[in-house]
Length: 325
Image 1 (tube, rainbow, N blue to C red):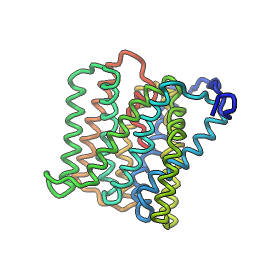
Image 2: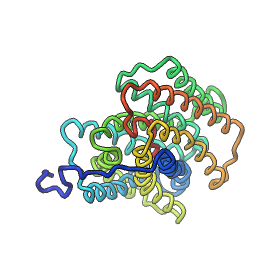
Image 3: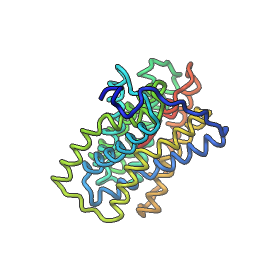
């Protein structure tokens, strides 16, 4: 597709300055977090009748269609040069890796359990950004990141039946965290050049042929025959978790101040655990509550420590250190 024939204009339309102050930024950011917080719950519902491969790939296909429409209507410029390779890294993490790993993991893992492990994501993304940008954060950053990871592993092991026992679902959840962290870190850097929601949209469009093939193959091998609730959950994952949630989240970060607004993300696992109890009627044990609080606390200290030591102003999704699909 050349720039002359593309429906997407090679020059980005000028974006208006967003206003609203800290309160406005926090409210938009909270709306985005609220949208993302239902992801593990609705994934847990959807895998009850739809195959994990179909959920992980199909939701990306639907989101890619919406992304293509948004990019075309707003006349975004095409990425250039190495930006395509970096978009592939973003797509591998947040479009392919995280959705597929979580879909397979939540076949057996309770949603509240998954929320506690995924609470590592803010700290994990901060670590990936530090590695990617060669920052030198203070020692407390590394201490809290390690303590948070150990706490998550300890919680997963304990829930699995013993301190020495980890289930396959736990390993998949940890892989999902790593995949998303890599994708968010690279996406945060790339967002400085392409724009935040534009980066996610281009990543979706870029790998849509692969995800379409996977969705078709999955449907052929196991025809999807979900209930109304399972299809509704799948629709939410595709339209909101994979696409619209980013609009509210990034709008909040754009209004800013970014460092303050980004901290709202740390309440996402708390919301997810609450929804698991209310919607799925999962029993909240003291281990789940304590594990979630410890991981969130460690992630919060690590992220805030890094934000305070940044030499340059953070990009939207970079400072967020999250964006949970």
